[in-house]
Structure formats: C-alpha cells, structure tokens
Image (cartoon, rainbow, N blue to C red; front, side, top):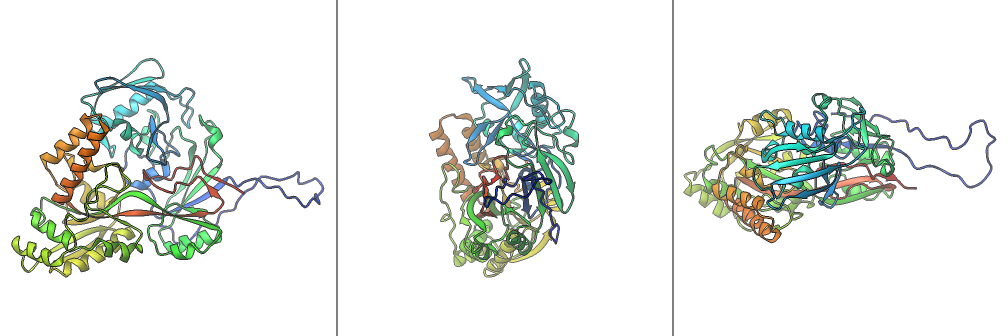
Length: 503
C-alpha cells in the first residue's frame, strides 16, 4: 500500500483567451471542477467483479465501469439499468427483459441480447469463477428473442433473482473482453478504465458514449490506495484528496469534524463483522462451546474499544438496515459465569487453546485483540495469526476452511442464505435452516417472506455457526462542495455517476 500521497496537478479550463486583454471586472467566473481524487484503504486485486470476490473490486468498478440488467440504488431499491423493463410469468419461472437501445461498450461493441446471454451463461457455467455463482445455478437456460429481448428460464421459483441481478457479480460483460477484464476492464458504464499504477493509483475517464451522458459531471476520477488513516486525514485537510468514502477506523473523525471545508457523514453499511467458526473442528462442533464463547463477549466493549461506539450490535447474520430485522443480541447475553459453566459442561473446565486467522484489516485486528482478552477471562487462550487478505485468507479460510476462528466483515446485503450454501467456510449444515431459505425463495408474499426471514435470523442466533458481533458504520469524509456521494451503503460501492462539485 502507498505510504505517501501522490501530488496531482489539477487542470482547469481556460476562462478566457490568453491573448485577450485582462478584464478589470470585479466579477470572476469559474467553472466547477471536473476531476476527483478519491482514496481507499484497500486496493482491489483485480478489476472484474464477475470473477473476484473482494469487496474492493466492486467498489471501484460497479456502477462506474460495469452495469447490470438492473441495479441497486442508494436506498437499496431495485432500479432498471441495461434493461428498461421486465415481466415475470405467473409461475415465477420466466423473466423477460427488454434491453436498452443504443448502449455500447467502451470498445465500441454494441450491447444486445446475445451479449447479455453470454454474460449470464458464463456466470452459471460449471467452472464459473463468479463469486456468487451459487445464485446463477437457479437458472435453467437463457434465450434471446430479437436483438433486445432476453429471457431467463429458472429451474424453480426464486424471489430474490432481481435483487441478485443488481449485485456487482452480475454485471454484463462482453465475449471479446471478458477474459481481460481483470486488468483492463471494458464495460458499458459512465466511466472507462484509463490506467492503473498498482500500489498507488487507478484512473478512470468519462465515457463520452455513455447512454445517459447528461448525468455525468466528472471527467476524470483518480483512486488513491492509502492504508494509513493519518495520511488519509492529512490529505483530506490539504486538499490533495477530495473524498474518503469509507474510513476503516474512527480515529480521525473528531478532528476532521472540526474542519469546515470537509463534510463528515456517519452512515450505515451492510458489513456484518463476525467471528467465523469452523463448525467441523473440535471444540467448535459443540454448541455449548460456541455458546460459551459468545457469552464471554461484551459486544459493546468491541464497539467502544475499536470503533468509538459507532458500530451497531447484531445478534444474528443480519443488520438493522434490512427488512424484517430482529434484535437477537439477547439470545446469548454477556455472562462470563455462565460461559465458564458451559465450558465445564462441554469437558473444558480449564479452557482450551486455539488459533484465529485474522486478516490484516484494522477492524479485524482491533476486534481480535478484544476477543482475545475476553476469552482469557473464561480460561480460553486465543492465539492470533495475521494473514494477508485477500490472497491468503481467501485460499486458507474461505476456500479450504483450514482454520479454527477468523474475523470477517461480510458486505453483501441480505445474504443470510450464505449459511445454506452447500460449501460454506463455516462448515455449517442445518436442514431446518436450508428449508427456511428455500421457502423464502418460493413465496412471493412479502409478509410471509418477512416472517421467514425472522425465523432464519432466530435459528442462526441460536445455533451460532459464528459469533455475531456488530455492523460497521460508514464513516465518509469529503470536500464540503462535493455533492452526490452515497451517505449509506446498501451495497458496498463508490458510485460516482451523480457526483459533482458545486460552488
């Protein structure tokens, strides 16, 4: 990660003919800036959200470089994008989309139904690398009817299909660029890839052929990758950086709030911080041990100690932003005495020792230290091994489930079905939970779905395949003249199409 700020020279439009006489009018006119310098703490490993899971990939590319049939707006609602409208058959098995006319990819390739079909078929292929490939398995086949009509046939009803199609992993890619999108992404979005100086910056430029060009005010966007919060804060105050959409620590907030040139926004995210457990390994395959560890933890201590009280406690794999949320933090309340009793009943009166593989992100490191101290109070020794995210963590934890405990912030919205997937890194399997998730997808009655979501939350809170800790806040700081930044984060993103400087 970059440890210093790269100075950027701003180029502004000429206000007058340089050869003309200097005007003596007191009125000075100026045009709004059209270049934006934005900073992220974590650099994406690649730039193709259809083939790589890290959240940082979608933050740079989703809604900026790539687009989907539909999208999720800043309020978490499904909106048209490359599809202008759609119909669903009465049995819920056939979705017919009408595609937008006149859309072209950044390389000039026209969007048509055959391209969209290719993209979906690629995502659902047996050897697909799509990070959400389990969702596309519900598709039976895809057909085209004319150049702008796409028809998706499902194997069985799936009420979440439209929502999933709005995610970063569902963006539409073209056959002639799909294999090179990792390093030179080509999409249909409002910005196109320009250059990537790895470890330092990534530049996008406005797509002059964009189908909705009138809504784009920025001409260039430069992402800076800086993992030091002090450097980030200094760069904001000096004006070298215009926006940090999400600080990964609350430390600079109080100081930045005193700067009138900056706007500080504390929003909400879908990032659920959990201590994942390997339910296939002893002693974590014993519910009493999982209960004991949960009751050894005071969630408020983690939030106060690591996030200045800005997080939100959660008792299941769900956030208060989501429909049908239940507050289940009281299912296993903080109680060290009961924790020790449960450990003794499970055969560990003197505790046990295990190793937690922790990614290097600040929220994980801070949470791990607090958990380590909490477990020590009930006789459990937690050793911390820091592993590089995404490379090592993804391979050892997510793919191979070679771990005891880990800490991760899961950013996908409404993804409680993660625990029903055939392969999940928690090694958790409960037919009753799977049946609930299946029932949610089979019904179109929203009230019944909400009831089922509540039951699913409760079952996870009781079973504890992971220790459910807190939801991260979205700590955004940007130039006070910058308009259109997302204050909340219903999907992990840095959407820039409506961002502009206002004088």
